[in-house]
Every structure is written in structure tokens, then in C-alpha cells.
Amino acid sequence: MIGDLALLAGTGLAALPMGREMLRKPMGRQARKNAPGQFADLTDGRTHFDWIGPKDGPVAVCVHGLTTPSFVWGGLAPHLARMGYRVLVYDLFGRGYSDRPRRVQTPEFFADQLSDLLRHQNVGSDITVLGYSMGAVIATAFAAEDSHRPRRLVLIAPAGMGQDLGTVARFATDWPLLGDWLFHMGWPRSFRSALEAERSLPSSVPGIVDLQIAELQRQGYVRSVLSSLRHSLRQPQQAAHHRIARDEVPVAAIWGRDDTTIPISAMGTLAQWNRSVQHEVIDGAGHGLVYTHTDDVAAALERVLA
Image (cartoon, rainbow, N blue to C red; front, side, top):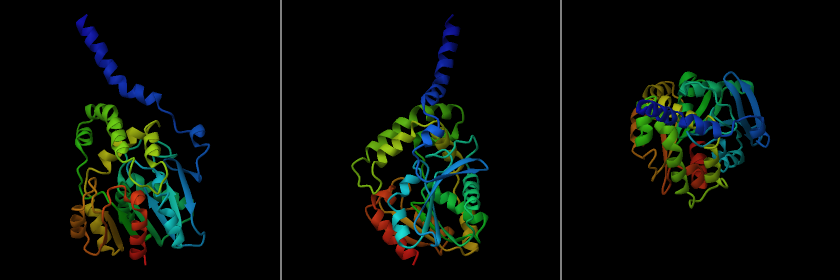
């Protein structure tokens, strides 16, 4: 009897993440009915995207990070448009209004999504690619695969230099199954708490804290974040940066002086891998600099894109 009760309790605990996931809202037609922009049916699923700026301008593609969909560019993209760029923003798989395919989320997986989207939109070479946080890993992988396509890379608060993922994420990435259970049960609460701590910060994206919290209510989001932590953020991108340096793709990096997620010390690592990178540092900025220090980042972009 005791053994049966223990088995039943264990089964119930194991099923808790699945039960939580079933209570979340699916990403489908109903969820997308008020989505801005457009959708493209690509190889691995439907992708949400939008264009901002003059139709005849040079193309700038903005790749968002681990937890923030394309709305994170809401304050910065208009600056790029005023600089004359035709700006493409889109949601990575597992975030925003895009599909949640059950694929291993490697940098190459996301680079393929970007390549598919550019083909769908008939965009060729000579583009500027901006990557924020994990988006910098994706932009780097994209450029390393085909260095003739990007005119320039701009990496903002860039991941890929081997940052500390934190206790929960580090355990979850190192220990499948048990790590999955812990991440699904513990990470949403810690993420929400971290977001609430930033509610008083200035933002060029109205309601950005609530927008990010709302992502937690969508099916496939937590699973996608964990997959990206495991397969896109664990390994440093040294080889990809070496290929980009060899092929002489111009690279600029913009850092937040007070960033605790991607510390400023990572700038030295990137400088060792690619000595031609142009660096800009925003004083007083943390990891959310694209929306908390938008004007400062825009001024830095004007300098590096001149």
C-alpha cells in the first residue's frame, strides 16, 4: 500500500509540468487575430514578422533574444527607420506569435529560420544584421554560415562568450529529465520576479514587463527557453567569430556598463576572438539597454553604421 501511494505521488509530481503546460494558451488563430505585421509559412513553421521604414532603404534585420519577442525592438526600430533603413523584425520560434516546433533550438536552427524568412521576402545580400543578447549568437551563426550576405553585424549585449546562466538554468541544462522538471516548475516564478524588479525602469516599449510576463501564459514558451539555454547558450561561439574575422565581416558590439547578465568583461573575450570589432559602451545601462537606454543605443548605432 505504501509503495503504491509513493508511486502515485511520484507520478503526480512528474505530471505537474505537463499539467501546467496544458493550462497555458496555445499559439493559434485566436491568439494571432490581433497580431501586427504578417506571417510566413516557413520550413519549420509559421513565423511572425513586420517591416518598418522606407521600402527602398537598405535592409536591417533585428534578431531578438532568449525571452523577449520582437516587441523588444519597438523603441529602437523607428530610430533605424529614421536613419533610412528598411527594418525587418520577427519572432523566433517559440516566442511571440511564431510557431513552437519541437526542434532542438541550436544557433543553426535559428539561422535557418532567418534564411528561410529572407528568401520568403526576396531579400538577398548586403544586409545589416542586429542581434540582441541570444540574438547575437544567432546573427553570428548566420554570418558564419554565409559571410557574403551581411554587410555588417551589430551585436547588442551579446551572448556567446560563455556567460553564467544562473543556478536553476545551469542545473536544468546539465541534468535532463530532472532538470526539465525543475526548470518547468521553478523558472517561471523566478523569471516573473526578475521582471517585476525591473518595472520601475524607463522603457521605450510601453508595458514591456507585462508583455514579457504574458509570454509565460503561452504553450511552448518555457520549453523553448530551456531548449535554447541548452543548445544555443551553453557553448561559446569562438569558432564562428573566428570565421567572421577571417572573412572580414565588419562587426560592432554595444555593451551595457552595468549589465549583470552579459557582463562587460565579455568584451575582452570578443576582442581576443576578433580584434577588428568596434566596441561601444553605454554607461548606466543593464541588459535591457535596447529599451531602457534606447536613445543612447541609437546614438551608438549612428556612429557604428556611419
